[in-house]
Amino acid sequence: MATTNNTTTRAQESTNAIERLYITMRHLFNRGFYKPTGVSGEALKNALLLLRPEIYGAIAEAKAELNGLIYVLDRLPEGIEECRFINLTSDEGFAKSHISPIIPPKRRRNCYRIDKEQMNIEITRGRSDIYDILTHLTFLFVESEKICKRVLIPESNKTIRDWQKLEQAILKDKLSRAEREIALIHSANILGRSFEEMIQVHQKFATETNPDKFLKIVYWLGKLALEEELTGEKRTITFSSLLRERLGHHIHGEIWANNIKKTLQGHGLLQRPIHIISANMHSVMNSLFAKRALVDEFNGANNLDIYKALSNPENESLREKVKTYAEANGMLSLDDASGTNIDVQIFDTERFAENACCYDLGHLGADEKPLIIVMDYAFGEQAFETIDELLKPYRGNDGTTVFLNVASLSIMGKAGILEGDKGDIMIPSAHIFEGTADNYPFENELCAADFKGKRLRVFEGTMVTVLGTSLQNKDILKFFHRSTWNVIGLEMEGVHYQKAIQSASKIRKSIRGDVKVRYAYYASDNPLKTGSTLASGGLGTTGVKPTYLITDRILKQVFLTDRRVKEPRTQPA
Image (cartoon, rainbow, N blue to C red; front, side, top):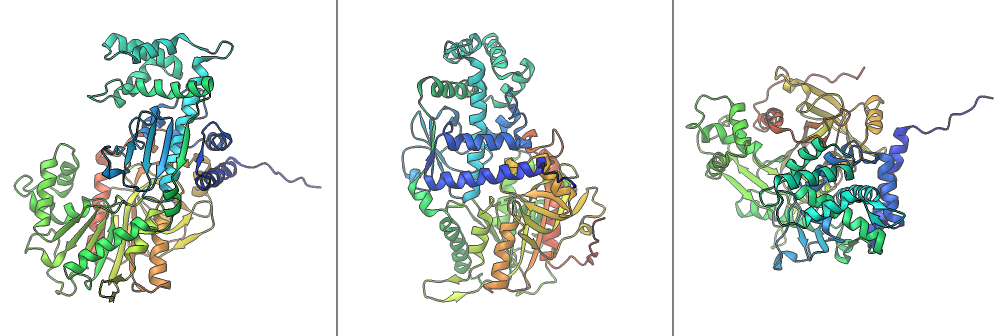
């Protein structure tokens, strides 16, 4: 009799680990609290260690993972490593207190240091935000326990000499160069890393006000784990009652969408043909106006050079000049006040002065001139909440109902690519939802032919919408890429956007059934390539060209100047 091979593959094990992580997280949320060293906390850590996501590098090894530490702490509030109590809350009015919010550099979320031991983190962007935070915290707890195991002598409950020397250095107000280097040598032994690596990471963390931030992070991660081991004082993560009550009810998305529709009504714009673009807050504005606004500074320069200059952090005055020019030509800026952290720009092309715009709109009649709504990036499931609310009819105070004339929705974003390199372009023909068989095929108005001759590689195929980019490993991604799913990349919002668009256009009939959709992504990382993951750093100027090429193609279609014939897609070989 033939034997059956029941051995699971690494991809299957990783998929099961992700499923366990999310089931555990939802259970803990419903429960209201957990301790990292308790049974539930250990379950999260064990699942993450089994998964070994690429973004967390050496998480499963005895040595510390330094790039993952940089990535995580860029997305968590400063000082969180010092806090024994971490509370995830709804928007509960902390902004009205005397406490100043702490906003992480790479995640727009309000956090409040209540006292020396407690950090409150406001959750206003849905479950994806909770998953993101809990995954990063679990990574921190794993790294914290590594330090504890390396510095604690089990037989005596005393610490090794390296730890004692690091503690002495931390207690000093200011370190000389020699003292700092000695402290880094001791820290290198604690973390299992070379002195050269420690110098590099120390420089990345250092700020003018806190030059020894990295040493303090190592110390506090180890200190709390040691206290937990020696005194039994446990770290605790809690979820507030209001957060558990409000989550999933579109509270912030509804406020956000109503603010936009009230603004449109106030300016008499509700009946205009509307084109919604999910992008950043600069590419559409710069594509429309930068060359005309900066004619004195860049007379004769090509567009790409102008866009690269505008992306330079030092050129704030140029960016402000373009914004002022845009506002003088029909742009309205709506800074978010709803808690979604999604700012909005509204471009009324009817108000563009003659020759103010870099595109030709002269062939369009007054009733054809589009109204463009640009929304900043949503985060995960928040994409469904915001678009679902935005596409609903507007109900005024007088009881009238107005259906929006939405002609198109365009989604441009960053995504991980599975074959190319940073800066390449991906054009999806469908989105599939990780962990399920849910799939959303659609007719994409964009195609690879749109970017021919632009010296960038373009890939067409399926995109997988993942539960969290920080949970992906090579085994899962290789399976997606090599299987008949024909996956070319991964991102976090596509399924959620398309689910809202389809329900509004096909079921609720709140927008036209023939609404056009456009999806295009540029590669921010390649998680299958060592050194090209998200933890390896940002795109720099590499992302400028694909960002503006995609924006240009979207605008040309919106303005009906794109006359190219779409080539039929071929089946993958």
